[in-house]
Length: 364
Ligand SMILES: Nc1nc2c(ncn2[C@@H]2O[C@H](COP(=O)(O)OP(=O)(O)OP(=O)(O)O)[C@@H](O)[C@H]2O)c(=O)[nH]1
Ligand SMILES: [Mg+2]
Image (cartoon, rainbow, N blue to C red):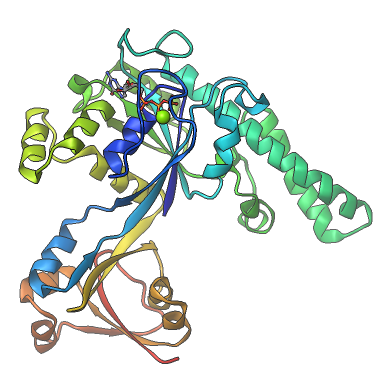
Protein backbone atom coordinates (compact mmCIF):
# COMPACT_ATOMS: atom_id res chain seq x y z
CA UNK A 1 0.00 0.00 0.00
CA UNK A 2 1.16 3.50 -0.81
CA UNK A 3 -0.18 6.79 0.57
CA UNK A 4 0.52 10.39 -0.43
CA UNK A 5 0.46 13.37 1.95
CA UNK A 6 -1.14 16.61 0.71
CA UNK A 7 -1.96 19.96 2.32
CA UNK A 8 -1.09 23.64 2.33
CA UNK A 9 2.54 24.63 2.95
CA UNK A 10 3.69 24.68 6.58
CA UNK A 11 0.78 22.70 8.04
CA UNK A 12 2.91 19.78 9.27
CA UNK A 13 3.11 17.35 6.35
CA UNK A 14 6.81 16.63 6.72
CA UNK A 15 6.41 16.49 10.50
CA UNK A 16 3.73 13.84 9.95
CA UNK A 17 6.07 12.02 7.59
CA UNK A 18 8.69 12.08 10.33
CA UNK A 19 6.38 10.71 12.97
CA UNK A 20 5.50 7.81 10.68
CA UNK A 21 8.74 6.85 9.08
CA UNK A 22 12.32 6.49 10.15
CA UNK A 23 13.51 8.30 7.07
CA UNK A 24 13.96 11.90 8.16
CA UNK A 25 12.43 14.69 6.12
CA UNK A 26 13.44 18.29 6.63
CA UNK A 27 10.70 20.22 8.40
CA UNK A 28 10.92 23.90 9.29
CA UNK A 29 8.75 26.88 10.03
CA UNK A 30 8.56 28.35 6.56
CA UNK A 31 6.33 27.58 3.57
CA UNK A 32 7.78 25.39 0.82
CA UNK A 33 10.38 23.86 3.08
CA UNK A 34 9.84 20.64 1.14
CA UNK A 35 10.73 20.75 -2.53
CA UNK A 36 11.82 17.30 -3.61
CA UNK A 37 9.37 14.63 -2.44
CA UNK A 38 10.29 12.51 0.61
CA UNK A 39 9.57 8.82 0.33
CA UNK A 40 9.57 6.54 3.34
CA UNK A 41 8.49 3.06 4.33
CA UNK A 42 6.44 2.56 7.47
CA UNK A 43 6.10 -0.77 9.25
CA UNK A 44 2.51 -1.55 10.06
CA UNK A 45 2.41 -1.99 13.83
CA UNK A 46 0.72 -5.25 14.85
CA UNK A 47 0.90 -6.79 18.32
CA UNK A 48 -0.18 -10.16 16.90
CA UNK A 49 3.03 -10.33 14.92
CA UNK A 50 5.06 -9.92 18.11
CA UNK A 51 3.05 -12.69 19.77
CA UNK A 52 3.65 -15.03 16.83
CA UNK A 53 7.34 -14.22 16.96
CA UNK A 54 7.45 -15.25 20.62
CA UNK A 55 5.75 -18.58 19.85
CA UNK A 56 7.56 -19.52 16.64
CA UNK A 57 10.96 -17.98 17.33
CA UNK A 58 11.73 -17.49 13.62
CA UNK A 59 14.97 -16.37 11.99
CA UNK A 60 13.29 -13.16 10.91
CA UNK A 61 10.07 -11.20 11.25
CA UNK A 62 8.66 -9.09 8.45
CA UNK A 63 5.83 -6.69 9.21
CA UNK A 64 3.51 -5.41 6.51
CA UNK A 65 4.66 -2.05 5.18
CA UNK A 66 3.09 1.12 3.83
CA UNK A 67 4.95 3.53 1.57
CA UNK A 68 4.46 7.21 2.34
CA UNK A 69 5.16 10.10 -0.03
CA UNK A 70 5.50 13.66 1.31
CA UNK A 71 5.37 16.40 -1.30
CA UNK A 72 5.65 20.19 -1.42
CA UNK A 73 2.70 22.19 -0.10
CA UNK A 74 -0.04 23.20 -2.50
CA UNK A 75 -1.37 26.76 -2.68
CA UNK A 76 -4.21 28.45 -4.47
CA UNK A 77 -3.30 28.54 -8.14
CA UNK A 78 -0.93 25.58 -7.82
CA UNK A 79 -2.50 23.98 -10.87
CA UNK A 80 -1.61 27.13 -12.83
CA UNK A 81 1.97 26.96 -11.68
CA UNK A 82 1.77 28.96 -8.42
CA UNK A 83 4.06 27.66 -5.69
CA UNK A 84 5.77 24.34 -6.07
CA UNK A 85 3.28 21.65 -5.29
CA UNK A 86 1.69 21.14 -8.66
CA UNK A 87 4.73 19.80 -10.40
CA UNK A 88 5.00 17.13 -7.74
CA UNK A 89 1.42 16.00 -7.86
CA UNK A 90 2.58 13.38 -10.34
CA UNK A 91 4.36 11.71 -7.42
CA UNK A 92 1.09 10.92 -5.70
CA UNK A 93 -0.66 9.70 -8.83
CA UNK A 94 0.43 6.14 -8.14
CA UNK A 95 -0.66 6.06 -4.51
CA UNK A 96 -3.66 4.13 -3.18
CA UNK A 97 -4.81 6.75 -0.68
CA UNK A 98 -4.43 10.42 0.18
CA UNK A 99 -3.56 11.73 3.64
CA UNK A 100 -4.88 15.28 3.71
CA UNK A 101 -3.27 17.27 6.54
CA UNK A 102 -5.34 20.15 7.95
CA UNK A 103 -3.91 22.66 10.36
CA UNK A 104 -6.18 22.72 13.40
CA UNK A 105 -3.91 24.46 15.88
CA UNK A 106 -3.39 28.12 16.79
CA UNK A 107 0.14 29.37 17.02
CA UNK A 108 1.15 32.84 15.93
CA UNK A 109 4.74 31.74 15.50
CA UNK A 110 3.95 29.18 12.81
CA UNK A 111 3.25 30.96 9.52
CA UNK A 112 -0.03 30.20 7.77
CA UNK A 113 0.16 31.02 4.05
CA UNK A 114 -3.36 32.46 4.05
CA UNK A 115 -2.92 34.44 7.25
CA UNK A 116 -5.45 32.75 9.53
CA UNK A 117 -6.49 29.36 10.89
CA UNK A 118 -9.43 28.00 8.93
CA UNK A 119 -9.25 24.28 8.13
CA UNK A 120 -12.48 24.31 6.09
CA UNK A 121 -11.18 27.01 3.78
CA UNK A 122 -7.83 25.22 3.57
CA UNK A 123 -9.50 21.95 2.67
CA UNK A 124 -11.40 23.63 -0.13
CA UNK A 125 -8.25 25.27 -1.47
CA UNK A 126 -6.53 21.89 -1.67
CA UNK A 127 -9.58 20.09 -3.05
CA UNK A 128 -9.87 22.65 -5.86
CA UNK A 129 -6.21 22.35 -6.80
CA UNK A 130 -6.45 18.55 -6.88
CA UNK A 131 -9.65 18.76 -8.93
CA UNK A 132 -8.00 21.13 -11.41
CA UNK A 133 -5.09 18.73 -11.77
CA UNK A 134 -7.53 15.90 -12.49
CA UNK A 135 -9.41 18.10 -14.93
CA UNK A 136 -6.18 18.54 -16.86
CA UNK A 137 -5.76 14.76 -17.05
CA UNK A 138 -9.36 14.19 -18.09
CA UNK A 139 -9.28 16.89 -20.77
CA UNK A 140 -6.12 15.46 -22.27
CA UNK A 141 -7.71 12.03 -22.50
CA UNK A 142 -10.94 13.49 -23.84
CA UNK A 143 -9.11 15.13 -26.74
CA UNK A 144 -7.80 11.75 -27.85
CA UNK A 145 -11.06 9.89 -27.35
CA UNK A 146 -13.12 12.49 -29.19
CA UNK A 147 -11.33 11.78 -32.44
CA UNK A 148 -11.99 8.05 -32.20
CA UNK A 149 -15.59 8.68 -31.16
CA UNK A 150 -16.20 10.79 -34.25
CA UNK A 151 -15.21 7.88 -36.48
CA UNK A 152 -18.07 5.89 -34.94
CA UNK A 153 -16.04 3.74 -32.54
CA UNK A 154 -18.66 2.54 -30.02
CA UNK A 155 -16.25 2.02 -27.10
CA UNK A 156 -14.78 5.46 -27.68
CA UNK A 157 -18.24 6.98 -27.61
CA UNK A 158 -18.95 5.33 -24.26
CA UNK A 159 -15.64 6.54 -22.92
CA UNK A 160 -16.31 10.04 -24.21
CA UNK A 161 -19.61 10.14 -22.34
CA UNK A 162 -17.94 8.96 -19.13
CA UNK A 163 -15.16 11.52 -19.45
CA UNK A 164 -17.66 14.32 -20.05
CA UNK A 165 -19.55 13.34 -16.88
CA UNK A 166 -16.31 13.46 -14.91
CA UNK A 167 -15.23 16.73 -16.53
CA UNK A 168 -18.52 18.40 -15.68
CA UNK A 169 -18.35 17.11 -12.12
CA UNK A 170 -14.84 18.42 -11.62
CA UNK A 171 -15.79 21.77 -13.13
CA UNK A 172 -18.48 22.20 -10.50
CA UNK A 173 -16.10 21.34 -7.67
CA UNK A 174 -16.96 17.67 -7.16
CA UNK A 175 -14.16 15.23 -6.46
CA UNK A 176 -14.14 12.21 -8.76
CA UNK A 177 -14.80 9.80 -5.88
CA UNK A 178 -18.15 11.55 -5.34
CA UNK A 179 -19.23 11.66 -8.98
CA UNK A 180 -22.01 9.24 -9.85
CA UNK A 181 -20.76 6.58 -12.24
CA UNK A 182 -21.51 2.90 -12.52
CA UNK A 183 -18.86 0.46 -11.31
CA UNK A 184 -18.31 -0.87 -14.80
CA UNK A 185 -17.77 2.61 -16.27
CA UNK A 186 -15.30 3.35 -13.50
CA UNK A 187 -13.43 0.12 -14.09
CA UNK A 188 -13.37 0.46 -17.84
CA UNK A 189 -12.60 4.13 -18.35
CA UNK A 190 -11.81 6.01 -15.14
CA UNK A 191 -9.61 3.86 -12.88
CA UNK A 192 -6.75 3.81 -15.37
CA UNK A 193 -6.48 7.60 -15.25
CA UNK A 194 -5.38 7.35 -11.59
CA UNK A 195 -7.16 10.57 -10.75
CA UNK A 196 -6.10 12.07 -7.45
CA UNK A 197 -9.58 13.03 -6.25
CA UNK A 198 -10.77 9.51 -7.01
CA UNK A 199 -8.51 8.08 -4.31
CA UNK A 200 -9.90 7.47 -0.84
CA UNK A 201 -8.95 10.22 1.58
CA UNK A 202 -8.03 10.27 5.25
CA UNK A 203 -8.13 13.71 6.86
CA UNK A 204 -5.46 14.27 9.45
CA UNK A 205 -6.39 17.11 11.80
CA UNK A 206 -3.13 18.43 13.18
CA UNK A 207 -3.85 19.75 16.67
CA UNK A 208 -1.97 21.03 19.73
CA UNK A 209 -0.80 18.68 22.46
CA UNK A 210 -3.70 19.52 24.77
CA UNK A 211 -6.23 18.60 22.06
CA UNK A 212 -4.52 15.32 21.17
CA UNK A 213 -6.90 13.17 23.18
CA UNK A 214 -10.21 14.95 22.65
CA UNK A 215 -9.92 17.27 19.65
CA UNK A 216 -11.00 20.93 19.52
CA UNK A 217 -13.47 23.29 17.82
CA UNK A 218 -11.58 23.22 14.52
CA UNK A 219 -11.82 19.44 14.47
CA UNK A 220 -15.56 19.61 15.09
CA UNK A 221 -15.92 21.92 12.10
CA UNK A 222 -13.95 19.57 9.89
CA UNK A 223 -16.04 16.61 11.06
CA UNK A 224 -19.20 18.48 10.14
CA UNK A 225 -17.83 19.56 6.77
CA UNK A 226 -16.93 16.04 5.70
CA UNK A 227 -19.96 14.26 7.16
CA UNK A 228 -21.26 13.48 3.69
CA UNK A 229 -17.92 12.41 2.31
CA UNK A 230 -16.99 8.80 2.34
CA UNK A 231 -13.80 9.59 4.22
CA UNK A 232 -11.96 8.82 7.45
CA UNK A 233 -10.74 11.45 9.87
CA UNK A 234 -8.24 11.30 12.69
CA UNK A 235 -6.95 13.79 15.23
CA UNK A 236 -3.20 13.87 15.77
CA UNK A 237 -0.83 16.20 17.55
CA UNK A 238 1.65 15.77 14.78
CA UNK A 239 4.40 17.91 16.33
CA UNK A 240 4.22 16.02 19.61
CA UNK A 241 4.07 12.65 17.86
CA UNK A 242 7.25 13.49 15.98
CA UNK A 243 8.92 14.30 19.32
CA UNK A 244 7.78 10.97 20.72
CA UNK A 245 9.15 9.18 17.69
CA UNK A 246 12.55 10.71 18.51
CA UNK A 247 12.68 8.93 21.90
CA UNK A 248 15.04 5.97 22.01
CA UNK A 249 13.19 3.26 23.90
CA UNK A 250 9.71 1.80 23.83
CA UNK A 251 9.33 2.50 27.57
CA UNK A 252 10.18 6.17 27.20
CA UNK A 253 7.70 6.54 24.37
CA UNK A 254 5.00 4.75 26.35
CA UNK A 255 5.55 7.01 29.37
CA UNK A 256 5.31 10.13 27.24
CA UNK A 257 2.08 8.89 25.66
CA UNK A 258 0.51 8.11 29.02
CA UNK A 259 1.39 11.59 30.26
CA UNK A 260 -0.54 12.96 27.30
CA UNK A 261 -3.53 10.73 28.03
CA UNK A 262 -2.94 8.57 24.97
CA UNK A 263 -2.80 4.78 24.75
CA UNK A 264 -0.73 4.35 21.63
CA UNK A 265 1.31 6.38 19.16
CA UNK A 266 -0.64 8.28 16.53
CA UNK A 267 1.13 6.37 13.80
CA UNK A 268 -0.72 3.21 14.90
CA UNK A 269 -4.01 5.06 14.82
CA UNK A 270 -3.28 6.49 11.41
CA UNK A 271 -2.33 3.21 9.84
CA UNK A 272 -5.37 1.49 11.33
CA UNK A 273 -7.60 4.20 9.84
CA UNK A 274 -5.89 3.87 6.48
CA UNK A 275 -6.51 0.10 6.49
CA UNK A 276 -10.15 0.69 7.34
CA UNK A 277 -10.47 3.33 4.65
CA UNK A 278 -9.07 0.98 2.04
CA UNK A 279 -10.84 -2.13 3.40
CA UNK A 280 -7.56 -3.90 3.95
CA UNK A 281 -6.74 -6.65 6.41
CA UNK A 282 -3.81 -8.76 7.48
CA UNK A 283 -3.03 -12.44 7.35
CA UNK A 284 0.12 -14.17 8.56
CA UNK A 285 2.53 -16.81 7.48
CA UNK A 286 4.43 -18.34 10.39
CA UNK A 287 7.37 -20.60 9.61
CA UNK A 288 10.66 -21.06 11.45
CA UNK A 289 12.48 -19.19 8.69
CA UNK A 290 10.12 -16.25 8.72
CA UNK A 291 7.04 -14.90 10.42
CA UNK A 292 5.39 -12.38 8.19
CA UNK A 293 2.33 -10.15 7.90
CA UNK A 294 0.65 -9.73 4.50
CA UNK A 295 -1.87 -7.15 3.42
CA UNK A 296 -4.95 -8.12 1.41
CA UNK A 297 -8.32 -6.57 0.60
CA UNK A 298 -11.18 -7.67 2.85
CA UNK A 299 -13.06 -10.41 1.01
CA UNK A 300 -10.04 -11.94 -0.73
CA UNK A 301 -10.22 -15.65 -1.45
CA UNK A 302 -7.44 -18.02 -0.40
CA UNK A 303 -5.86 -18.11 -3.91
CA UNK A 304 -5.95 -14.30 -4.10
CA UNK A 305 -4.25 -14.08 -0.72
CA UNK A 306 -1.65 -16.60 -1.89
CA UNK A 307 -1.07 -14.45 -4.98
CA UNK A 308 0.22 -11.62 -2.80
CA UNK A 309 3.17 -13.86 -1.89
CA UNK A 310 3.79 -15.05 -5.44
CA UNK A 311 1.67 -15.29 -8.58
CA UNK A 312 2.67 -18.98 -8.85
CA UNK A 313 0.99 -19.59 -5.50
CA UNK A 314 -2.24 -18.28 -6.97
CA UNK A 315 -1.98 -20.05 -10.33
CA UNK A 316 -0.98 -23.41 -8.85
CA UNK A 317 -3.16 -23.14 -5.73
CA UNK A 318 -4.30 -26.51 -4.38
CA UNK A 319 -5.44 -25.79 -0.85
CA UNK A 320 -4.74 -23.68 2.20
CA UNK A 321 -4.16 -24.79 5.76
CA UNK A 322 -5.65 -22.20 8.06
CA UNK A 323 -5.15 -21.63 11.75
CA UNK A 324 -7.17 -18.97 13.50
CA UNK A 325 -4.85 -16.52 15.25
CA UNK A 326 -6.51 -17.14 18.63
CA UNK A 327 -6.09 -20.91 18.25
CA UNK A 328 -2.43 -20.48 17.38
CA UNK A 329 -1.91 -18.44 20.55
CA UNK A 330 -4.03 -20.66 22.79
CA UNK A 331 -2.46 -23.94 21.68
CA UNK A 332 0.99 -22.43 21.30
CA UNK A 333 2.21 -24.12 18.13
CA UNK A 334 1.12 -25.43 14.76
CA UNK A 335 1.70 -29.02 15.90
CA UNK A 336 -0.54 -28.62 18.94
CA UNK A 337 -3.23 -26.97 16.83
CA UNK A 338 -3.06 -29.91 14.44
CA UNK A 339 -3.33 -32.41 17.33
CA UNK A 340 -6.36 -30.59 18.66
CA UNK A 341 -7.99 -30.89 15.24
CA UNK A 342 -8.23 -27.13 14.89
CA UNK A 343 -6.35 -26.82 11.64
CA UNK A 344 -8.71 -25.98 8.80
CA UNK A 345 -8.13 -27.27 5.28
CA UNK A 346 -9.70 -24.85 2.85
CA UNK A 347 -10.21 -24.72 -0.89
CA UNK A 348 -10.39 -22.07 -3.59
CA UNK A 349 -13.61 -20.55 -2.30
CA UNK A 350 -12.38 -19.81 1.21
CA UNK A 351 -12.63 -16.14 2.17
CA UNK A 352 -9.59 -15.24 4.24
CA UNK A 353 -10.32 -13.65 7.63
CA UNK A 354 -8.28 -11.00 9.41
CA UNK A 355 -5.54 -12.65 11.47
CA UNK A 356 -5.63 -16.05 9.76
CA UNK A 357 -2.32 -17.91 9.89
CA UNK A 358 -2.04 -19.48 6.46
CA UNK A 359 0.00 -22.17 4.81
CA UNK A 360 -0.50 -22.68 1.07
CA UNK A 361 -0.18 -25.94 -0.89
CA UNK A 362 0.41 -25.41 -4.57
CA UNK A 363 2.12 -26.88 -7.58
CA UNK A 364 3.73 -25.07 -10.47
N1 LIG B 1 2.85 24.01 17.35
C1 LIG B 1 2.89 23.07 16.42
N2 LIG B 1 3.78 23.19 15.41
C2 LIG B 1 3.79 22.25 14.46
C3 LIG B 1 2.93 21.13 14.47
N3 LIG B 1 3.17 20.37 13.39
C4 LIG B 1 4.16 20.99 12.71
N4 LIG B 1 4.54 22.12 13.35
C5 LIG B 1 5.59 23.07 12.94
O1 LIG B 1 5.18 23.69 11.74
C6 LIG B 1 6.30 23.94 10.90
C7 LIG B 1 6.04 23.37 9.52
O2 LIG B 1 6.02 21.95 9.57
P1 LIG B 1 6.41 21.06 8.31
O3 LIG B 1 6.13 19.65 8.70
O4 LIG B 1 7.74 21.40 7.78
O5 LIG B 1 5.28 21.56 7.28
P2 LIG B 1 5.01 21.07 5.78
O6 LIG B 1 3.53 20.95 5.68
O7 LIG B 1 5.83 19.90 5.44
O8 LIG B 1 5.46 22.36 4.98
P3 LIG B 1 6.03 22.49 3.46
O9 LIG B 1 7.02 21.41 3.24
O10 LIG B 1 6.63 23.84 3.47
O11 LIG B 1 4.83 22.40 2.59
C8 LIG B 1 7.50 23.33 11.60
O12 LIG B 1 8.19 24.36 12.28
C9 LIG B 1 6.89 22.36 12.58
O13 LIG B 1 7.70 22.17 13.72
C10 LIG B 1 2.01 21.01 15.57
O14 LIG B 1 1.25 20.05 15.69
N5 LIG B 1 2.03 22.00 16.50
MG1 LIG C 1 7.29 19.65 4.04
